[in-house]
Image 1 (cartoon, rainbow, N blue to C red):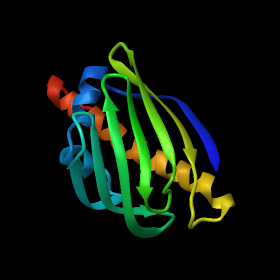
Image 2 (image 1 turned 180 degrees about the vertical axis):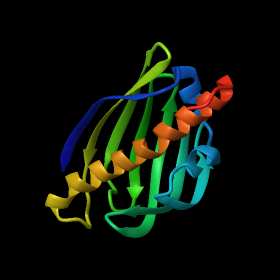
Image 3 (image 1 turned 45 degrees about the vertical axis):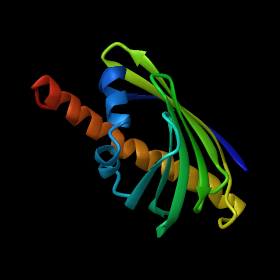
Image 4 (image 1 turned 120 degrees about the horizontal axis):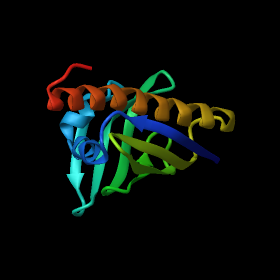
Length: 149
């Protein structure tokens, strides 16, 4: 098991806009090229079960997560199936004027990867998620303001 903290990243939009993006469902999911065949199942007003195929460590594989959203503070994710099954992480959002801070804290594990590969897989996941969301949020916010990025 590997514990990771990823602090200090920012999105180039205010927190209310970021949350509209996070709740965008399929539109939000479309920014992520490392997932395909998404399915959303509502569990409660704040929790969904998200299933897809995920590209991680160079391979596509089934992936299923329980995701709880507590706006405007946090998103809690628990892997139920997939390469990182059993992993848990929390995304914490903080307002920073016209930007939004995002810090991530997680405990990652895998039944299919060697222990030495778990941290690399977790960092790959975090990097690709942020790498998809940051430009999508920036572009959408600039468009909403009527300016170009």
